[in-house]
Amino acid sequence: MGSGFGGPGSRGGAVGPNPDFDMGGPLSPSSEFGGPGRRGEEGTLAVPPPWTSPDGSGDTSGTLSDGYTDWSNIFTLGWYYKVPELRDFIDGWIKRLQDPDYEIDPYRAEDLFEAELRMQNWFTTHAEAWITAEQDRLSNPITWEDNLRTHSSDIQTIASNMGYAISEDEASTIADISIHGGYWTDAEIERYILDSQYYDRPSGERDLPEFGSIRTEADYLNQVADGNLVDISGRVDGWAHDIKSERMTREQAEQQIFQLARSGRFSFLGDDRWDQWRSSGMTVRSFVEPLRQTVADTWELDLKEIPLNHTFFNENLVTEEDGKERFANSREVKALAMKSPEYRKTAAYRKRMADFKLGIYKSWGVI
Image 1 (cartoon, helix red, strand yellow):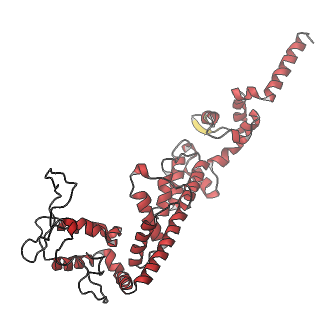
Image 2 (cartoon, rainbow, N blue to C red; image 1 turned 60 degrees about the horizontal axis):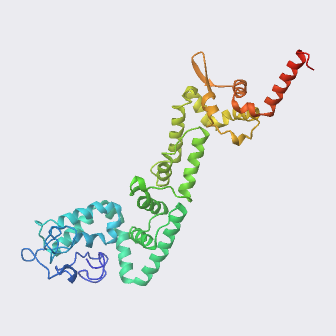
Image 3 (tube, rainbow, N blue to C red; image 1 turned 90 degrees about the vertical axis):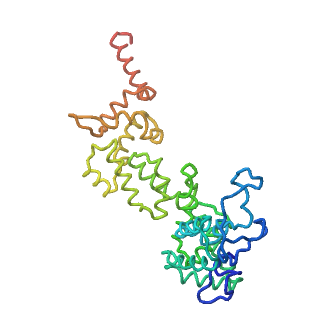
């Protein structure tokens, strides 16, 4: 296929307002395919049968049968195969050309491919940019390469700001597609990077970056969840990426966090109260923080030594009255804290016990 649509080796050669497509011209495979080209009927394009092993073992992982072109390799090397919106279309053509029963004149195949490509939604919206890019690439190769390197560097910076490190080759591929698409916006480049670095990977290989804008988004959502004592550890990575890729908004993620809170352990608060809290900026943590301070004072501990996931709060933060759940108040929490093993380690407890013993001794006339 030459070096791409309209590249060296294409029919016509000159760069016109509508660069020619190149399906490879008359079939004449290079020596790597093991022999001269083969055709079907006169003037038709022979297509590759299934892979065959040189030793006849039936191993399908070897080389192609002599004289046939590996169209999948030819197509997938082009920049256009990297365009997500065109990939299904290209795969369909690969399958068509690899069908042993499909015979077509190579130039006819070229024309048909070009006609169908121009009907694809992506091409109809990017045709002008694509033609301009091809003209620049062919007529001003030095300037083209300079622009490609500059754009590649910018793309690596965008990826780094997101928290991902991509290679020069990856950045160059994205830059090529971007330029052919009329120079993507930063948001479009970010979405492409997110696809390759996250969404296109198996779920077990999807990681949250250790730094960058995606990590910042995840940290914010964790803060919102922590404020309402909700565990989102299994969801936050996906939400952070979805927000960055514009699959969802931050507000939608926050709404899901509040929905988890209001339908979970603290559902007794009721929707009206939850709505009031959210509109005023109140959270479960800010509401119960005075209770946490009461326990810390009772146990003579620093506040940070008593997190809200402490066993004491799991058991005593919510109480029941007349068959209805509610938050315990400060008086109730202090009374419960004074009954716990932690209170027996305090100076206040030791003083109370000493005063108690002293009172007993006095009543017995010991002192």
